[in-house]
Amino acid sequence: MTVTSDPMRRPRRRAGRIAAVAGALVALLVMTGCVPSFLKPQTSESTPTGEDVAADLQPFYGQVLAWENCGGAFDCATAKAPLDWESPADGEVELALVRHRATGERIGSLLVNPGGPGGSGYDFVKDSLDYAVGEPLQQNFDVIGFDPRGVGRSSAVACYDPAQMDSFLFDIVPGERGSDEWIQNVGKVKADFGAACGENTGALLGEIDTKSAARDLDMLRAALGDDQLNYLGYSYGTFLGATYAGLFPDKVGRLVLDGAVDPAAQEEDVSREQAVGFESALRAYLADCLAGGDCPFSGSVDAAMNEISRLLASVDASPMRGSDGREVGADTLVTAIVYPLYSADSWPYLSQMLDAVMLGDADAALQFADAYYGRNADGTYNDNSTESFLAINCLDYTYQSDVAVMREKAAEIAAAAPVIGPYFGYGDLGCISWPFPSNVERAPIAAEGAAPIVVIGTTNDPATPYAWAVSLADQLDSGVLVTYEGEGHTAYNKSNDCIAGAVERYFIDGTVPSDGTTC
Image 1 (cartoon, helix red, strand yellow):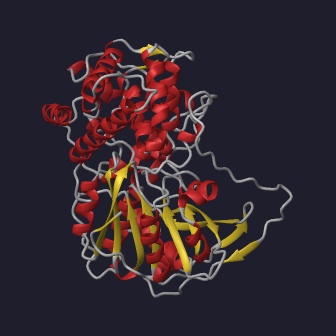
Image 2: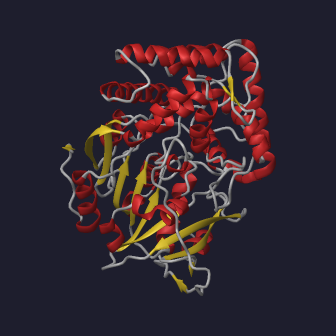
Image 3: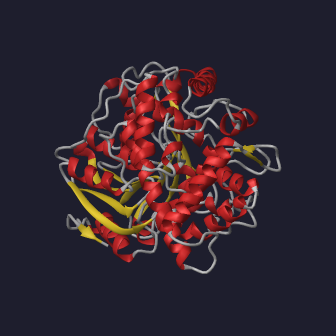
């Protein structure tokens, strides 16, 4: 059994990783920025708002961002933020920014976060602009991508080198899942990982919580020269946006939160509800697969679910081995299964992968797991998204150290989602030995006095279940719920004109969708 049973599956909008899953299995969207090397960098500066803030915050809120051309239509800059917002003199962090200027009549800046936590907004905008936002928003806004603290090109979490990361993600630990031996071994692996993060990251590791990132967001708003924040957050980015609204309701401009995370949900709720969500998406995939002509299963959806359950139990007991020597246990196979469930467009590739695995090809599962983790064919990793995902979640939730309670919670998850749920438990083990304990209490966010905040939920979203969108819209004093009846993770800019129109009219004209709009 691998040690990657995370407290949560990443609620992140995955722009290009499925696209990169490799050769024989996948050929989806691959978006790159081609940049002539002979272009001479051009520079410009943002004019900050000049608003009145505490004297020790003035150097940050009043900083002038120096933009340089970084290829094609993109400019890049670096902002400074306090390491600790409660003690601004105690060091700084750097935040990496990229800007695509409005191509038409400019309204202001639009900051975009793709989710995660740990997703790079810089890469999301620079490499996948048309996927991040639609053409109407590109015309009217300077689209700003940013890497939150701890992530990517900003001051970043660092834990393991690629070989150590492979071992952490893919090695099988001794013991039967849930046994004392297994819990002890997984706990040690997780504790060693946390210790390495602490050693290689330092004090930053304790300052990458979402509340601190939301305070960075307000500083960026001011440095960009915007009196109010216009923001599009996907997935975990909805939690960042809602946190911002709770801290700075009077600075809320137009916020759209797509694929909502429930701020009040506890870790065990998130794990259980995500397991149920992915199991529902798996059933939807199987129904579609069985109705088609090229499906590795036959019979009913229930029969196919049972076959997948047996497959997972088999590799849990006797892992497969890939051509590079890595083992594929149940956790890795679950990762390979849930990854293409983020988008119904990827279901045909899930069929190909499952067919290959059932014929004994472990490499097929590793290709999807590698795409999920951002692992390249040469064994390197694209970014630090896995490390920052774990590190931020360890600060954003509280965790249970009582083994009996862990087992009880794991049993509840398995009962709620009998096929996938058994591999979603014991997430607490990743954070109970973290070098910087969490002191956050999850609670509803009302953001009283904020302008209307549009919350979008997809009815069969596996990563951020629809109930979370309903809950967040209800919590927010000015929440407006828009529902997309469909499959997949997030809804905007995915070929649904109803959703696209509602979002773009709100950002451009200020037209608030009717609460309860269904597309």
